[in-house]
Image (cartoon, rainbow, N blue to C red; front, side):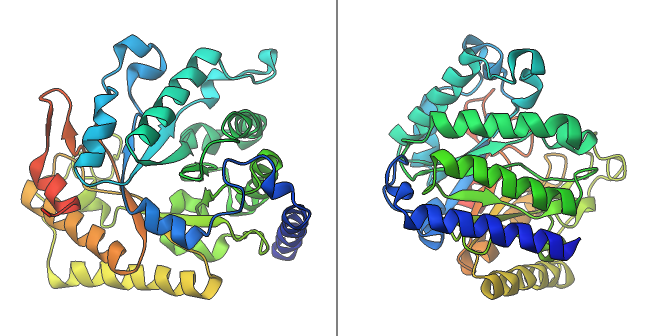
Length: 345
């Protein structure tokens, strides 16, 4: 199976390479030449996840996140927003998996508004739980989604990146994921040969599964994303969706053993990155709201600085809903978390 996957990856990579050499890459993307993914990571810098659970996707008038928040994010010192899109449940075979135009117009608004505020944009397909439960049923939707979204944004500037799927897990095994990502990349490259694409390893974008990720060698315009929430007993204490951690409270973080673990974990990612010549985006990290604020801020700062010291970009989880860095109800930043992420300049 491993040899088969490597063969598929090599063949897909050769197709992508030949496409670029023949000049297709200069015709349809907003950027005439493929961006350098390491330079893209520098541009991404500090980011925040947005809009994943906002009612805006069902009714624009009910949005919690407003247009002014994009400029507010930029002015606070962030360079990037990672837009979390839950779209697959809106698609069905009866309509040939066509995305609703109203939903797409909301996405247009988000991308346009972010770019107008001088923010980079990562378009992240976030239906990970749906896909994990029924990969075969959702695969046609994933490919149809990227066929439509890639075509819609083919002329967008290179400040817009595509992330194929958040946190592949469950029945979407490593072997299946490696097949899927090749097919999804091929769909994207047809209309966006020069677009930077974000791809993560299987098992929740876990750092311990990077060696299971099989990317097409010839396609170098890829950023590899990992997520980090260790130790879960601290970062997810009191979280109702985490049954093994919901009963914990008052768990602190920051002793020498705990900081050493982060350094060791990140060193393994750094080693993989150098070996494979792939830049890294820490696409999610944070500590849930029920934890002690002092430890949450300490953890958040340590993770952010550890990523930056290795030249990675990062995107904090998240602006609104939970783990928040901004309290929309009170219309103010959660200052300890903001300062942990973006120290006073």
